[in-house]
Image 1: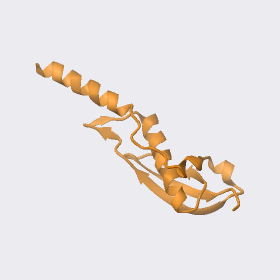
Image 2: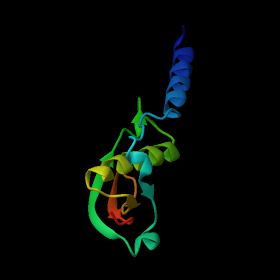
Image 3: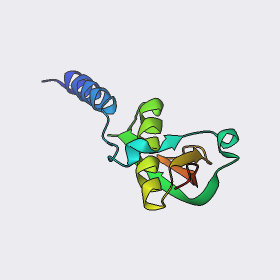
Length: 108
């Protein structure tokens, strides 16, 4: 196989893999919501979490929407450990890393 075909095959493989979801929500994480700051004004802040993942595969940027979706899932999973039921992004995504505030909105 010549170099051009190998490069094309590798690029196609990386693009196909970048569309895959690598992060799955836990059973408890599925119950955690992602909201905006305006939507949590009556909630109690219980902490914050910073989550990260690979934003590049083989030097190629992954789909930004997929990266955001997976960061949201990681934040939701992490919120459970802080007894939170809602997360709010408080930073932009930078190199596959993002910080979220964790809130408890539903009284126990």
